[in-house]
Length: 500
Image 1: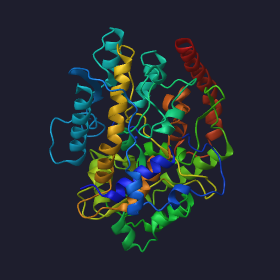
Image 2: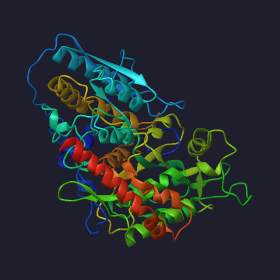
Image 3: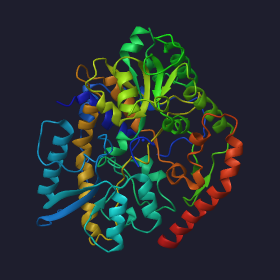
Image 4: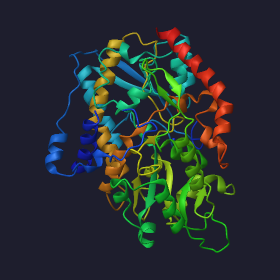
């Protein structure tokens, strides 16, 4: 049974503000600081009155149509060898008793009956390659494709995707579309791919911080949720906690899988820690075209603090520190966290699903702010793993496609997404409604930085490539900037040529 309060937490916030190299191939506040607090966190989201108001459905404004049994086909990703990053939000063969599967099944039956369609999916290990081949062959087999965000960016530049303004019945202002993604992923006021309540893998690929409540209790640590609410969850505070919590249990002077680490992660998450301070590679001008903004004193500070946390071998254990373990994530970091030998674990949200059977309780937290002056929390998605929602130019009936996608997205908001929240924050012993509050904060403050996604001239991955050496930010930036500018201008020119 899905908890009413959890649904309320999710829907109220959406109404108010109308993952890396391991397993997979609202504009945020950009470099701004203030003394403000996050207003969303002060709202009482746990009353029955709020719930009753929140669940009043907003219906999609669509015509009454019937497509006489036409098939509507999605092209989606298969899971990788470790069971991650595959689509599970589009199709379900039957009800199985698993919450998300059954919500997907019921949503599809509702839309199929309403529109007279049959929803199908084709699964592949490489959506981009298969979609590109069919587009070049002018084959209209797929009505909607869900490529990785990095792949969608490449396909848009090649002219393979339909701009959302050419899909007449999609209303991107509706709350089942991610407003941050809509505003940040456009170029020249054209949007070719986005995310919303129809997609789940984009949420799974959001970087988060889990914490082991048993370890926190054993160490007598303060309430982390309150630190977030009070805007005291900063990198300095985070670092002091992980240093105090770490223990060299076997006394060999090496922090590894046999010890208690304050912090577990991998070097890919360096990018998340850095960009979640609110730093961005680009901003956009009045015509919605990107320009570089990364070279700032604040960015230098953010990189230094990030490297301090990830580079402390007395407090942190990274996957790269465990080369002797065949799978240092599943058999290393995951195991340490599950066996109470890790306080914090920074990783993609999808890993939380793998923790539902662990004996100790756990919670989820946002990434820390750079300092208390940062105006709001910020969160990155892993663009190599996140899916997106896109329409190939081979689609013959754009009106039908827009109706189906809008109807499915609207229905997903009230069925699939509440099930996703319920599953994500519930382990075998407890439902953590404070984590629901944190998860809502995380997903409502996500950043979709084009400079990070396109990685022009490798400048988007610069914090990762610099690690662990501090003091190289300016010299590395100056070396990468000319190519980054050139590559970015080529992308802009391609968009102007293709779409103006």
